[in-house]
Amino acid sequence: MNILLINGANLNMLGTREPEKYGNRTLQDIENDIIEYGKSLKADIHTFQSNYEGEIVEKIQNARGNYDGIIINAGGYTHTSVVIRDALAAVNIPTIEVHMTNIHSREEFRHTSLISGVSVAQVVGFGEKSYFLALEGLISILNQQSL
Image (cartoon, rainbow, N blue to C red; front, side):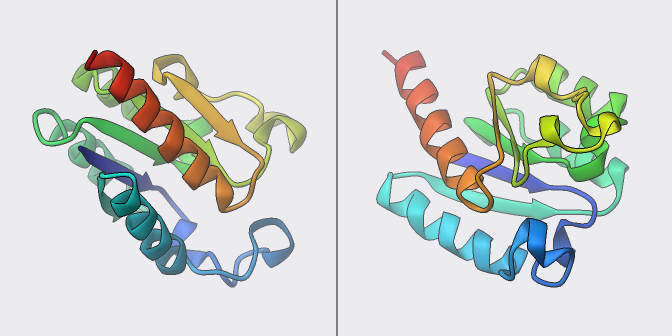
């Protein structure tokens, strides 16, 4: 099972960016842990991070036929990017949206996710554990689909 983990703008700043909200671990730390956890679940996790919307769109478009599922934390693009939303809809790959913080309890502008409407689920508010919960959920969904 091949899973693509996409992280958007500013997530490369984890570890130093607002540690009271996001913790002290880097994105690389989290990615390394999720790759190892994926192995224990018989899933190959491939990671990608970009601060550029177009690069994220291209990665999603190229996922068709290469990945069974997508986990995406689009960062601020969650609330603004119609093109990321449309790319996810176009490839029609089961996708779980993930956020470390609870976007629904933060500033009003963060309450709306353009991605959630084309995702099979949303995991928010568990810090870095959100990624692990999203992975478990996605694998469960993919296993059910293959029955």
